[in-house]
Image 1: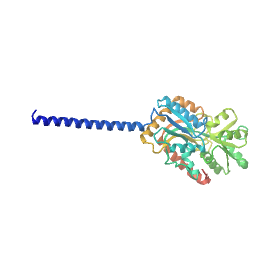
Image 2: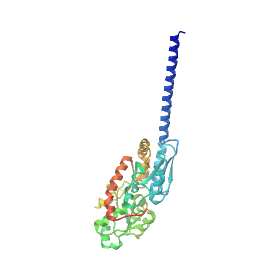
Image 3: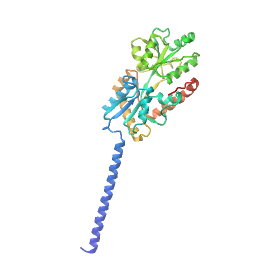
Image 4: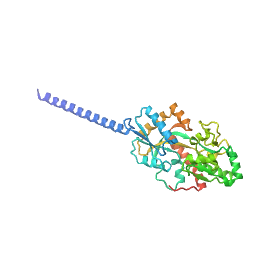
Length: 342
């Protein structure tokens, strides 16, 4: 082999070696990137946890378990529901806000935590705008005002006339104070010129028992919690919140139909939230998962039968609702003087 051939041979081997090195480096980089993305995705091999701030058996727990089952059927891997009740779901919220932002731990919570609690509580253990972000509006929660069947009033207008004649007997039973139901009732009292003070209870069940027996003149809570007594003929429902009649009880008029716009936003909804540091592509993936699950006819039927209306809305819809509802209630809170300690 001459000198020129030897040099060309060495250059060829060098070029091939450099090419292999470059190819290997590119492949390694691609594998690392793929591994990184795979780790960042909600994994179907890991257990997805939905954390609920209320005890098993309630409306929130029902929503969580119904969605969890549908998400499993949609091929999203093992999913569990973990109940962490207490402090109107704030214990569960605090737990999730400190969890790893990998999309594997989701908080299922009621909207007042983000809409009115920042207005009615002096200090909270969380920042409603910074600690968590919504990925889905799961269900709407129509609320309603109820009275015992033996009361002399059958509609909200009849109740208003009755408390004008009996102002000392006006009151309303509430399972949670500082929420939209208390604010809406305060606004009604302001409009008709009669104070309707709240009577606080530790849950909807004892409150509704007292409503049925007539110990309190009216009570307000989620329509879902009132349906068993309503169907049993123990209570009358005077009106439901929102702008349209509830799908589970279309025979009941809205408060708005009866001339009371103060209950237009005296409703609530359940949303799915994750820590703010959760990457956007994971949040998008979760949003798609919940949106698909919400299209299940079985899910819609099961939750609708207990007074919960499936929405399956986006995270952007949740942000919009939070902003609009907080803006609506801010002047009402200021006028009411409600200020609660955590």
